[in-house]
Amino acid sequence: MEKNNKNIVKIDNYESSNWIPYVKYYLDGRTKKVSNLLQNIEGNKKGSLQLKELFEINNLFDNPKPLEFLSILINIGSEDGDTILDFFGGSSSTAHSVLKINSENNGNRKFIIVQLPELCDTKSEAYKNGYKTIDEIGQERIRRAAKKIKEGTNADIDYGFKHYTIKEVNTNTLDKLEKFEPNYVISDGSILDEFGINAVLTTWMNEDGYGLTDKYEKLELEDYTAYKCQNTIYLLNWNISDLFIKALIEKYEKDENFDCNRIVMFGYSFTLNDIQTLKDNLQQVKNIKGINVEVITRY
Image 1 (cartoon, rainbow, N blue to C red):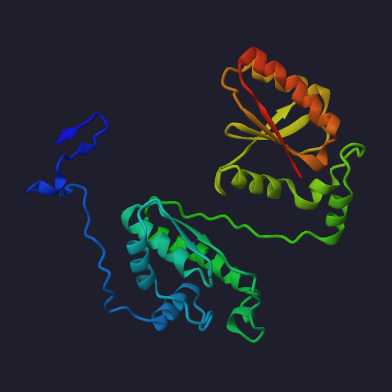
Image 2: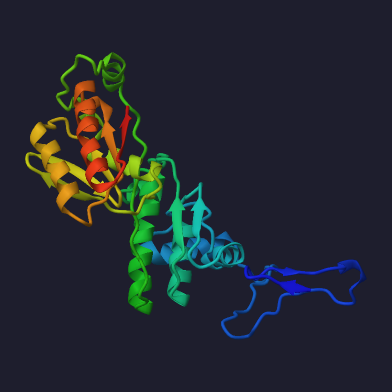
């Protein structure tokens, strides 16, 4: 048997050996393993009572899952720092359970809750109390659960959440996209207005691996506002100018900490001439600072 510098143990003649390797676990830092035998679990009736206690409304949602049951499943199937995904969000019992678990062990599990904007029955208690769609119930539950848990435990955890929606592109916007011609059209920013800056940035940042929780900052140079997330600059606004390009190059040259190596452009806001002018000028950055800036145009 020999051990190399990569902490890999090599065993010769394993079949003829009188011993086998095993992993030794130490007591320090260990916790009790969650049992996979579910006992004494109350059903949806308990879940309904928990929802009633939180909202002080009877029959707000049909068959919500009890927190204890979900907590057991989450503890079995995940570790601290994991993200729990629930594609049938309902009343957000899963999110409530994640917050509860985090408060008990000062953990950092996260949740993603997906729910269609399904309409509540106009005769239901939910509708009578102002909740027009099921996702509205789920959002309010997260707020109320977070407030209750914080007041009851004062645990130092993340109680917040972000709400994202998928918006269908209207016919007018699709028509503009089909007719867009970057060789000739001088953009007026109308296509960007249809989507919204925040929606485009959120979509692209997630696509670029920054996730849904990372933040961007404004990068204001001369008469233009760009957006920056870590090492990526996003150019969305249509009124780009030579003054901005000059100021951007100067920032690369003079700011030692400015080392963005990727620029993403919203293609509908620029002509091909705009894009090429930026690329040509960025060659100076490579020559002076040694950074090869990749320019990506997205439509």
